[in-house]
Amino acid sequence: MGSILLMILAFICVIIGVAGSVLPALPGPPVAYLALWLAKWSGYQDYSSSFLIWTAVAMIAITVIDNVLPPYITSKSGGSRYATIGSIVGMLAGIFFSAIGMLMGMLLGAFIGELLFARNGADKAFKAALGAFAGFLLGTGLKLLYCFYVFYAIIF
Image (cartoon, rainbow, N blue to C red; front, side, top):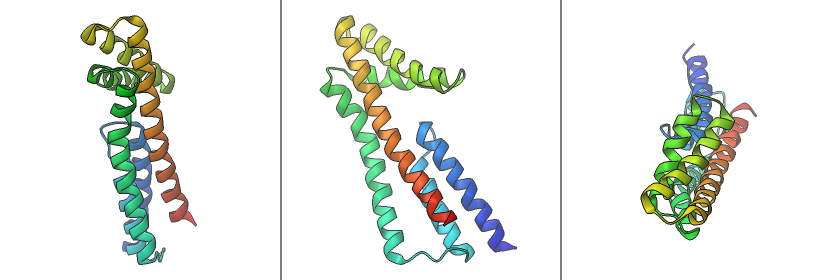
């Protein structure tokens, strides 16, 4: 009975991990990594130590990249931290509408944040918004790939 409960918890962690790959409040890859340990402890999966180490290294690398990449791309595209903050606020506001609303809210939030607070003009604000958007998409894409890989590893 305990092993079944651990596998159920592993699947819940993977689902939370996928959601956390998109939502900024949840740590997606670390929760997905926990799912690997839960599956191992359940006895249904027998992962090697090297597999668990490499997936931990990948999780740490992706988490670091996700925290460094969006601000870096935003700054390289001429944006300030206001574009990054605006993209997060816009994304959170857009979540209430749909996935498209979340993406559009992020782009619009970065644009408005840069336009209002950095006062760089509309052209530079739009370029910065595109940079913030690209950074978010790249970071989110890496997190989703990792979480879906973990899901695959648990099932197969």
